[in-house]
Image (cartoon, rainbow, N blue to C red; front, side, top):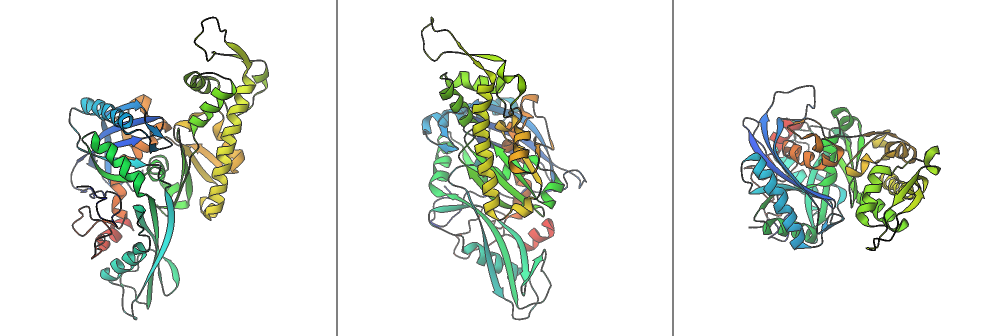
Length: 443
């Protein structure tokens, strides 16, 4: 039975992890460039100073990745092609792990992922705040975000207020007249999610949970101090670039633009009239977002586009390649900068930006980003995970690794019903998370 059945329900929901036992978790990162399936064993870990929010150690026991087909800017554009790539990636991971997968946690980077803050308030009548009041106010905030055409991916309380005093982390037991909560709700177009789920169902798999790509890559690439003090993670993928802003330990904003590394490749293919795969290779080997004095003298040979063997490769100065690459990279970064500015979260981001995703590996990117964004920039690689093959340790695998970390923070969200089973917010009685539990664990 699909979770999308009823008119109100959000996306499929995760069951919270038990902190007492081990779990096997499977994830699927469906991107415009590649599709990655990872299977990992999560074992409970002791509280530690390193990555303190993590409740489990993650050890990868199977991984499979395929070049993406049928996915454009994160949207499933060809069901058959996408389904076959998903099957191949999952199959490879299953063989390596020596087990079969039936459900997966999947990322969402399309469907115009939107981020909104809704405020809910309830009247306490001067009484003390009880767990039931918290449930009520969280429900009031989330109710406002329900729309026919959009499904909720995440709803995270970012702070409570009592009688107008904001910034209260745990109001339980306090007295007041008005209890308020700010709820950060991430939504996506229902149709896009439906097609994503359909593609996975056709490969005889079910969706266990859906996670916005920016949330996943932020979880993988940011260190604890960044998440506490405020930081933006920018995930530069093949077809989309996503932004997530974290502060005080939680996700406060997300955004996405349909520009990525693949646009740089197509610019090169057009500008130098060469085939896409040749342009991709030139981007990786010679491409840079930074001009270099020697670029005028260095000549690069460009393979011709035609099938005729008599066609000779043309020679172009490397500076031409750099100019084409730089124009597109600067445009992408300027868009990101404007989006951060417009979101109102610029002061929270402060001076900290972490770049991740496959396209972040381009030579000279962090220097260009530092200049365009006027902030400190570092390249973020996935952290706190063992068993990754060397090839999968780079920023290109941040989203997949973040999907593995996600079940450990899924508790912070307020959709699960009391039993911790997948419950949707659209239930007429609107049961929400066991809030007392959630408060204890997150503060």
